[in-house]
Image (cartoon, rainbow, N blue to C red; front, side):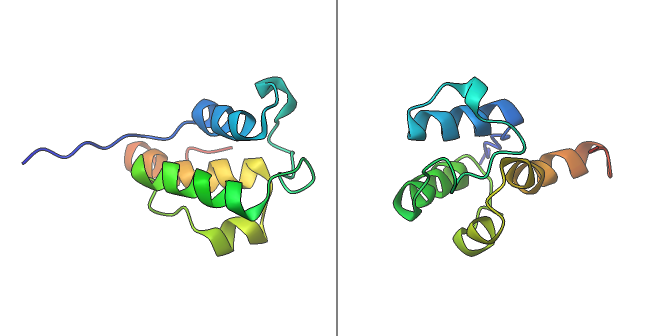
Length: 91
């Protein structure tokens, strides 16, 4: 039985956030606090479910709401794929 292992990328995370907020991707940076730009708990849960379905098992409502900065989410959600390829490769 083959398993599919979709990898979340920085670009996909930003595109998903921008899409759910109805803003241009250029408005979302690593420093963006998603609560400050209007992300509510319902839309956050929608993103989390989307990312879990894509294989981001670390997507968790409590931890993501506690640190609602895009760069933190990117580091957390892409850590599994990066650590498998090259441990400590993030800047």
